[in-house]
Image (cartoon, one colour):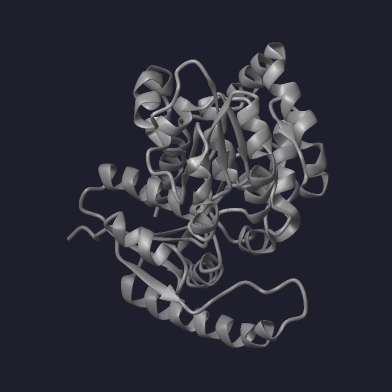
Length: 365
């Protein structure tokens, strides 16, 4: 009797880890219709809602990150880590996965570590240009590492690396045909330019404050604004809906229409966001979060900026915002250069490429 294919996927914490995991699962489901899928996430994180919404079962580990400054929360970390290893072991023993896939986030560390110990093939999908310590450790025993940037042989065994890109929403591939629909959807003025504000799936206090401080200036420049504040900040900033041409949202679901409506984008520099911005090819100003491990958002943004494909403002440089953004909206040559160059970095077949690597591992099991 043929053994069933059991696929275990671990990733979460932010949308940047969850959506690639779900994209991979959806594509694998098409290929292996009879396969069993199970996700492992961190209790109380957004994957515990998002994964079931996508139609998959998920188990939660009691795990969180180690705080970089001295804090009482760190005292619980060793206990959480031991508890997570134990639960991951029980989950893997019961589920008997054919392969374990990690897309990053707190839970993927214990899950892939246990799989490696048990001799189960693991695949790491590393989204960032600068990997965190967990994936560096896991890479030593991983069967394959799918990456989105060049130069990661500095951190991972070179013979295991495959440059695939990061999974992106497939509905972003043809947004140029959706401009009129997008203008209508957001009730925008066809004659004005539109700025899209993205603070990541959790929202960004610094970006929200920046836009609040400059919203009247932006309106005076004849710029319309689609502003994703994040759920945490929506109640504080929704009052700006009263300004003409300003639309605030806690979260944007129709990203195809959102990008189709935009002429310029201000964004954090999470890996998945960058991959999507490369696909849609709009002029981008990155404001990376300084509050992430290894400062990887700044490193992600610089990998694009060094190819003359985006602009960058660090949080400690935001007083320069008006001069930098004014140059962007008034210089059409700069707009075209940024747009063309960022499109050249796009890897639209990332999900299929990752699936090919997973398929090889399953076939050779």
